Image (cartoon, rainbow, N blue to C red; front, side, top):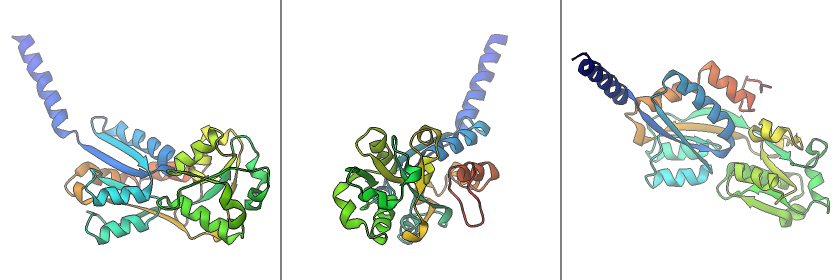
Length: 256
């Protein structure tokens, strides 16, 4: 009898946990990979039963996918323009919230990029330079703007190899398919990359601001977990992680 009661109580507890567990799928720009992984891990410590899944990729592609009905509950974009356009078209269940202004850097796995500038890319010894595809990746678009503003586009354009997103762009450099890349600061400061060839910060005056933002999608209008996660992004622990990776808002200072 006692065994039956115990089994019933365990089943009741498991049912209760299952009933309260929720799930969200986040579409996040690839530059958020390291920062978002940390934030999600910390968030889930408080509610381990909740399921928070993150898909990383190109912001422009995510915008198109959401318009086509992709099952994303939150969308974190490397260019705030994309969630703003979705909100205008009725695909958002929240206001568009800015979460950072991004930066681009020169990074190399085996060259000392700290001693380089954009002008270094014109050197004949550098034959392959990786940038994200500017057609749908905001970091790629800013890389093109910076090269054009520096008067280097004609010399550098034939050397370019294109990544699907900014994480793939960094991978092209890591694997030797490019000698140097123009990538996100948030990736270059990750220990996995920072321990290699170093980076040089591209002056932000050379490109339009990389204002980044997110929305809760219309699909998640009644999803309490989506709202809790969005609120958590404003918390001190979350902002500490973001600034550590160079994702700063006006008035904030990038962490170490």
